[in-house]
Structure formats: C-alpha cells, structure tokens
Amino acid sequence: MFPHMKSESIAFGVAGIMFGLIAGWIIGTQQASPRAPAAVAAQAAAAPAGDSGGARAAVLDEKQVNALKSVAEREPSNVKPRAQLANLYFDAERYDDAIKWYGEAVRLAPNDVDVSTDLGICYYYTNQPDKALEQFDRSLKLDPRHTKTLLNVGIVKAFGKQDLDGAMKAWQQVLEIAPASAEGQAAKRALDSLRSAHPSTAATQQKPGV
Image 1: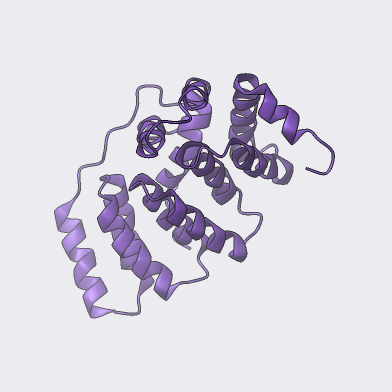
Image 2: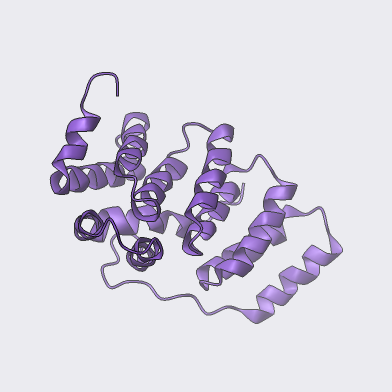
C-alpha cells in the first residue's frame, strides 16, 4: 500500500479545528451554490489536526517529479512511482495532475484502498463530490471498515452534498468501528458539533432502527 498521510487532513482539519463553524454555515445556506461548500471545506481541510495556523501547499519538486516520471515510463507496470507522483501533486494542490497519477496507480493496484481513497479525495477537491463518493464506495467494497474512507464519506456528504443525515451515519460507523482511534475521535467531534448545530438531524439519527 502507498498511504498518503495528507489525505487525512480533510476529516481532521474540518472536524478538529473548524467543524462547528462550518456546520452552522452549511445549515444556514442550504440553497447556496453547490460549489461553495466544497470550497469552504477545502479551505478548512488544508490544515492537519493540531495545526491551527493552516498549511500551505508544498512546493513541487520538479527534479523529483521528472525522476519519478522517468521510472514510470520505463516500468509501465510499477505502481510505486505513480502513487508517489500523485502524492507530490496532491501536496502541491495540483489535484488534476494527482487524479491522473492516482488513476494509473488504481488501475495497476485495484485492491489498494488507500490509493483509491486518495483518488476520491482529489475528486472532492476538484468539485466532483459525486465522483468522490463513487470512488469511496469502491474503497469500502475493498474494506468496509476502512475508517479513513468512512470519515471522508461524511465530509463529502456534509459539505459536497449537504446530506447531513448521510454524514452522521458515516461518522457513526467510524465511531462504532474504532472509537479510540484518531479517526474515531475526529468522528465524535464532528457528530457532537453537527448535533449541537442541527438537533433535528440528531433526533432522526437516534430513532430505533435508523
């Protein structure tokens, strides 16, 4: 597997730093442009958990990029340079380029849940929430208990689709699977904030059988 640690920043940045503020903003602007929630969530998600000062895009190392591209050209069945290229482009916030290389990596390693989820995150950052959720579905078919994927499903449903019930269900799954993990704690903060800001949604979630 070729996990990309920055991919976790979507969930941790939103849930851990600004979720309460953004949740209230979303609830108050249900009729806003569908692009707006993604843009705001992406801005919040730029900072990993604990980095209240925010994070800037990494400077792309063109020398490293060219070296990895050379390896990828020489070794068309080697997933590693493709995943590494995708990670570099992701960190530089060049998401269209990252999508290209994550796509190639997924084609070569279709069972790699981490790469699949990173591809979905890139779709979200390029204002394609439906494609992001489709990709997350593929990840969850590989591992239905993959907490990082479930955490990001909640973010995309909340901010990309304004589906607060769906977001809460995803975060509740994370909390049930791994309550003591970093993902579980992020899910708990997100759920607490959303329930506080939108109690009617919380009431729906608490009905038996839901």
